[in-house]
Amino acid sequence: MSRTSQQPHAVVVGAGIGGLGAAVALRRRGWRVTVLERAAALEPVGAGIGIAPNALRALDVLGVGDAVRAMAAFQGEGGLRRPDGRWLSRTSGEAAAERFGGPVVIAHRAELVAVLAGLLPEGALRTGTRVVSASPEGRVTTGDGTIDADLVVAADGINSAVRGALFPAHPGPVYSGFTSWRTVVPAPAAYLPHETWGRGRLWGTVPLTGGRVYCYATAVTPPGGRAPAGDERTELRRLFGDWHDPVPGLIDSAAPGTVLRNDVHHLARPLPAFHRGRVALLGDAAHAMTPNLGQGGCQALEDAVVLAHLAAPDAAEHAVARALAAYTVQRLPRTTRVVRRSWSVGRLTTWSSRPAVALRDALFAGVNRVGPRLALRSLDGIADWRPPAGPYAADGTGQARQA
Image (cartoon, rainbow, N blue to C red):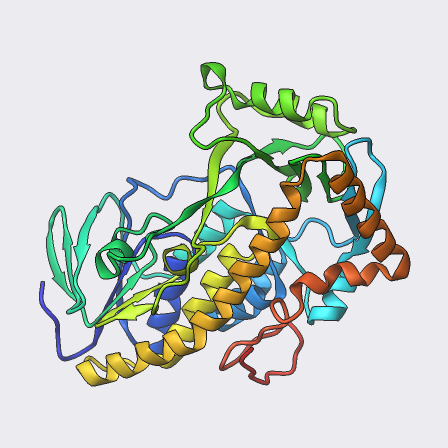
């Protein structure tokens, strides 16, 4: 396939949240878009995702912010606990909304993917398509042939093949020192959202709509491990089975084969740029981070709307080059700060010595006594981001600002 002079063509590699968001944003901007996804189908993944106010504003630009806000199951009080159940700090959805101009929505990842995919025209999403390479000139080679695109958006994840081809000298992602588990289980009762921090271990419980609970956990462990017989519930029981209620019961509620286990990696060294030639990197391909601030998908959605805002539908090489250079200038410094801040929080969860954990717990409890809202400060300068152009409904101002 070759470029056409009538409507510039953008090819997006990867149909995750960032890739779909970029495709929708570029289409709204006037591009013809094709999304290439190697999986045979957009299978529902049993995991939740935190959608902070910054990402909700990006979704407003895509026209689905309110639809995603409606996915929120709970906006009451939650907080941080110890393994014995004692609360170390508390905050509320209302406090977060007041501080950042909108709520934090916890949704099922598959439902957000479905909303975004539903905004694309028939035929724009091609599943079962493996991308072999993408050149700076915009040539995308797949198992079925080649596509000459005016713009290529590489949203192919943390192990991005496109990133490796564009920046072969970059060391790539590094192991963050801990492994994660995620699952969605039926909820026999209403649970307060919370994280529980122990010695080198963390457990999170968040209610979803439809009588479900999203559970996530991390633990310091060597990479590459797997539970005996592949049943990760066994490993979760070993690590968290003696923690406070409802943790043991939630583990028992998980159906066999529904617990996802992933070693956590991040890009400790920033890339020199988020583009080369006609190719832009987005989301985890550009700035993979630990999950500790819940900003991985949020930053990918920011990338998507900023890239589309800068990229006028112009196939001329100088226009694409100018747009992608501006994209790097706007996104690389901000995402580098978020990656580093997320890793700083993640490092606290890896502490395992009793004195260090006692000091950490005392610090959290002290901050809570001074002012519960101080716990939200880790998202200052992040969750209050606004897109470069509206509309967005999170705070009703319609004003633009770049963080």
